[in-house]
Length: 333
Ligand code: NDP
Image (spheres, rainbow, N blue to C red):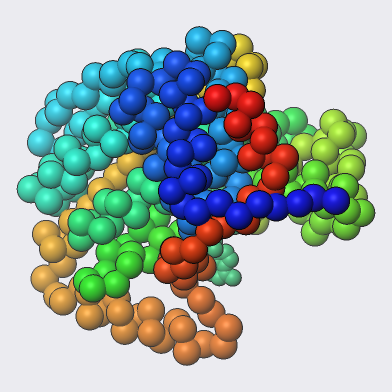
C-alpha cells in the first residue's frame, strides 16, 4: 500500500535543497531549485514538484547539467533579451533574466526573452505568473523530446510542448493557464494502464497507428496525440518553432539526438513574450477584463485556470508526500 508522510513547506524545501546541494549545485542554484519544488508542492502542481528531483539529480550526476554555472544574459535591443543558459537549470536562467524582460516590456510595451542551452522540465506557470504579477501579459513555451505524433503521422515528432499564458489583474492573482499540448501526459496514460481504466479516444495510437482507448497499447510502443486533433497539432508545431528555430535552439527530435538519456532534462530552448496592457490599451483594461472573467464564471460550472493552484496556495499547512519518494530523495543527499 502506498503510504504518505506529512512534510511542512519548509521541510519540503530542505529535502529538495539537500538533494541539489549534495549533487553538485552551488548554494544559489540549490536555493532556486528547492524554492521551485516547494512552490509546486504548495500549489498542488504535483507532477513537477519532488517527483522530478531524482531526474534532476541524474542530469547533475552525469555532468550534463552544470549546477554551478552562470547564464550569459544580454539585452540585445530595446525589446530582446537573450540568455545563453550555459547548461544551467532553466529556473536559474529564468531567475536572472526575467527581471530584464519585465523592465524592457514595461518600457517598450513588448519584449521577448530568448533562452538557449538550458535544462527545463518544470511546470511553465512559475515564469508566466511572475511576469503577470508585474502587470504584464505573458506567454511562454518550451519543447522537449519527441512523444507526440503530428496529425496524420503515427510516429512521435513533437515534445509534450507545454504553453502557458498569464493575464494580470490588479489586486488579484493573475489568471494563468499552463498546459501540455499532448492530449494527456504519458505518466497519466501509465497510471490508467496500471489501474485498468480506459482513456478517451484521441489520446494516442497503437504501434500500428490505430485509434485506441486501451492505455497499454499507447504506453507499450504506441504514441500520444496532440489535444484537439490537427488544431492541437498546429499549436504543438508552433511551440517547436518558437522554442526551437526562433530562439536558436533545437527542435525536439534534435534534442533527442543530442541527449545522453540519463533521465534528466535535456538541453533546449524557451520562448517568453511579455506585453504591457498599460502601453497597448487606452481603456481600463483591468476593469474590462474583470467583467469578462465575472461573466465567464456565471456560466455554469466554469472556473478560471490557475484557480485550483491559487486556492491550494492559501493552505500553509503540511503536504502529504509519498513516503517512498521522500526516502528516495533522502538517499540522494
Ligand atoms: P492540466 O491538464 O492539469 O491543466 C492545464 C491547465 O488547465 C491548467 O492551467 C489548469 O489550471 C487548467 N484547468 C484544469 N482543469 C480546468 C477546468 N476544469 N476549468 C478550467 N481550467 C482548468 O495540465 P497538463 O497535464 O497539460 O500539464 C501539467 C504540467 O506539466 C504543466 O504545468 C506543464 O507546464 C507541465 N509540462 C512541462 C513540460 C516540460 O517539458 N517542461 C512538458 C509537459 C508538461 P489549474 O492548475 O488551476 O488546475
